Image (cartoon, rainbow, N blue to C red):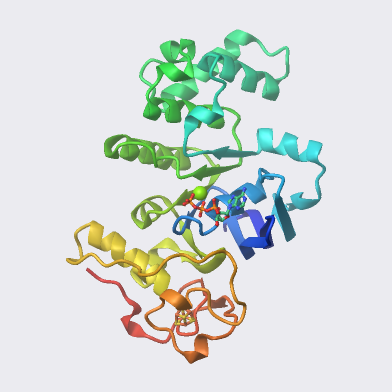
Length: 331
Ligand SMILES: Nc1ncnc2c1ncn2[C@@H]1O[C@H](COP(=O)(O)OP(=O)(O)OP(=O)(O)O)[C@@H](O)[C@H]1O
Ligand code: SF4
Ligand SMILES: [Mg+2]
């Protein structure tokens, strides 16, 4: 029986701009089970990072966040004070960003970072030797060939792939329960990307941490996730178990993503694009947000579309979901 670690209910994020309020995350609700990986997928600007940062209270000052509740380990963390939340973020919740450079102090060695995190968790008087021994162990688990040497280095002395491994090790060092990984392989070449994905796969099997893994690549989501959320223009348009969602996507946008992934894998011969461009963030509420790009659009789509359960799948935000056997995307 799986245990819910995180439960997000009705999360909304808007940015206050000079001209207007820009809603970038609307009524987002989902949960993550302990030890599981939730893939969060969608094209650029769909709200993946903002939604995750909102959960970790990492939004910039011009953002406003509203949520019915954000429950972590059964407790509503949306009501915590900043001090209480900072403690939680340093211990139980962690985020790995696309570019590892920004997560390190450039004038300090990798060893200094491990010592700092070690003292934070174990107390200022924690023996240095013990911290460094454990640091070497976790670096080795992150496939760093010479941990001793890595601890002596400065961030700029490492390649992007090595630094991302060090960051993953540093995050794992504090044994968080939930790790948000925001496109952690985007800036890496194909081989290193594959190695880092394998590392995530290993960590998820060897620890009981849960992950929210953000990506714009359906193939990566399929490889790494137990369940998937697809976001479009700030809304969840489909969510469900990875296998069902990949085999028989229900929302036209998800179908486009899955088809493109299969085409890139060479299982389908032609490469099609999901036509049109993502909107401006200002959405008429009397129309499906995907309508301007949807090949299945009809007059009946001209109202706000709710997420609804579809048998054998999860939740889908489309009036036609569950109606059509041709939704199956096969090689
Ligand atoms: N500080 C900000 N001020 C105003 N708008 C912002 C700010 N940060 C993000 N946005 C807007 O919020 C929307 C969602 O951005 P977000 O970064 O979450 O997208 P994303 O899905 O993570 O995209 P990507 O794949 O490019 O990382 C975008 O329209 C973006 O322009
Ligand atoms: S509700 Fe209509 S416009 Fe929206 S995704 Fe479904 S078919 Fe397309
Ligand atoms: Mg992003």
